[in-house]
Length: 127
Image 1 (spheres, helix red, strand yellow):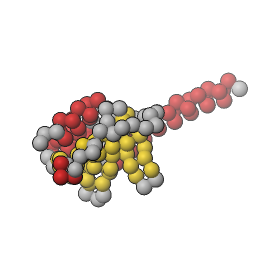
Image 2 (cartoon, one colour):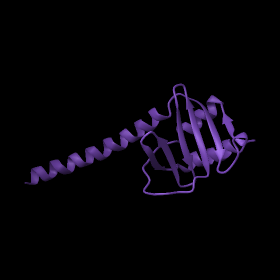
Image 3 (tube, helix red, strand yellow):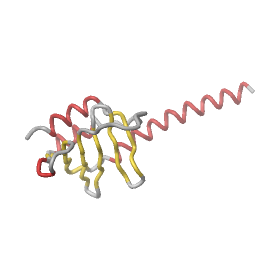
Image 4 (tube, one colour):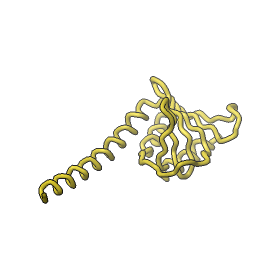
């Protein structure tokens, strides 16, 4: 009995660790090969969008993007941020609290890393 309880606990720990690693790997894959990042402030006209094409700034921004699930159900997104990749794009909503990634099956919500948010504000408002 004790042996199966110990084994069960060990398996839960392993699944927890590998699940976290999988989420981190998934975020790196999802944002690999980004060529441009398009920022559009909420309720702004498309003519006011800011396009970031500097590979150094793009790498810096993507390197700070670590996805950790958020428990928030809804949020008022401040920015529409589109990551243009070699093949396809990743559309997101970003605010101080969360990042909402939109895909074919719906949306996933993650916590916004503070350094990532600071860079979004800086890069998106350079004009």
